[in-house]
Image 1 (cartoon, rainbow, N blue to C red):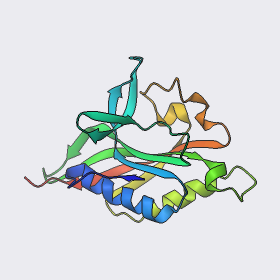
Image 2: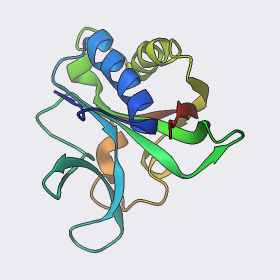
Image 3: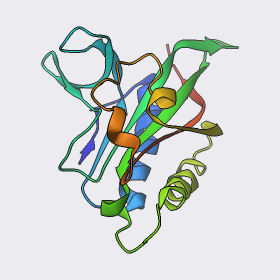
Image 4: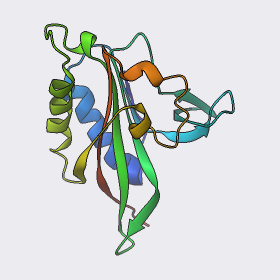
Length: 173
């Protein structure tokens, strides 16, 4: 499912362009794709958790969904800068939490590189996102978040990685 927002503005507008492309072009089965997530206090009050605003004051935890083959979402940095008060820049992670067996069932080895390359090919097509690299593993990708309940999601067949970079977006005011 592609979880979009109506009439996105600023950074959400650029994120949604990439989000829609990933959803349409990856072709992975049972995929949940979200836009920019928010850093909220976890339900057990043990730290921060990434959540997507679904409306009416409600948020959805995007860490995992056992029924899906992948969860994809965006985490923006707390600092956004500008040179001219028109274009703004933020460091952004595009996070992928995938079940390799469900996405690449025909591949007999750990297909982490195949999945990463597929995602990177799509992300690189967007001129407003300058790719800086990759992050891998729960502790690296989710630095600053409570990962107590998702520690095992980087053991086969699961793979967690992020494409990192700088996103440029416009604010008209």
